[in-house]
Image (cartoon, rainbow, N blue to C red):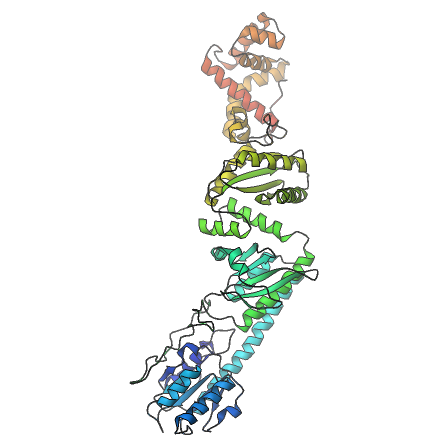
Length: 583
């Protein structure tokens, strides 16, 4: 009889429940009489016996098949028979109720229940020899498959190491191989990387939970949640650890044909794989298998090597990635975003967040400024994420107590940024009361940065620019690349600019002085150093060239906006612009 080798998920040995679900045994109508909570035990071999002392031929993990003929008649003998099987570590006892018995003996049920040994009754005749052939073929096939998969794991992580993969890529590979969430943390329990990205909700309350899972010297289970953990080292010292979280297996199994009800007069339990753990707590999901251990071992090894070969501190990378996720709103939910921020050491409850952008002059070493700013904030005890958002632009997220003045904190940050690079431009967004609003705060800071030309003087007594500083001139500077703004300036002032260019006149300068004087010809003449008559003549020429009435307040305003636009375009002219200077 052929059996489907895919009936057992790859990566683990077949269990008692898996074997009972095989057609070769399902035909015997197997019924788990007792020990259903232990049918997730692995079956390492099948042993047929009609001996009164079969344990002497076992090594542990065997599925013992018997017709019941050798069972002792007295309860003490039955208990001794079961105790020997349990002591050697038999996986389960399967008794055929055809020849000697037609229902499981009460003494046998009691003995198996007392020792936690699964007892399975077969209502129909089963060819035990065929069972051994099928199950042994299945076991050997899965052992070979496990070896192939283990070899594949080693080859995959070797390739990652050889090409210098970073921690994100290494953890992503581990998560994909196992279908479980994998987290990298440092010694102070900051969760730096979590893969897959959709598992960020698993970081909720990370530091508290992590501190309940003690460190181990090698791969092993730790903590009340049953984490699988492995140490990550740097230059011979423990640097942190990688954690694999328990969870549902990604492999779906079909419904089991095994009957779970007890026969009349007996008590039975379900053979489901998930019941209770050895500590009596409900299991969170399938136990970790040998392949999970292998993957985590290779993950820790690859991370240890990567830590030696990659100069950038992983904390900096973690801050960068977290900031970019917040700015681009890549989290699945606000709860995920809060968990990610808290896992990196920031407070998310009862906190106010302030987004800051630090733009560096071209050619400056942004990574050096990032390190200096991060160290400066760390020395002051500030809760902040610091990271490069793009070349030349640093992002900072400050987490402050609501009672703490945010302007004072922004001022200290601005001073630190200017100390790190005096040519930097610091722009601050409006405060946010929740992590979900951080993206808006960064957008505010970005709009301020767009409206701040390089070298613009800082407001008196301040080290940063904010939204309230953006007036008409800075708004037009922010919109300087918009073709509609460029077209407006050209339509309003083009004829005047062309006249000055052809004839060497200074009509644009005269118009500027007149508008700056709020329409006073006398003040304009004084400010430009011209006679009043000359000013009158030039203003008439301007009205004729532009077809405008300079006595109209509305038209003066339109021209004044056009001149402000011209200034913005000249400060940072768009590609191909041919705007001449009027001064």
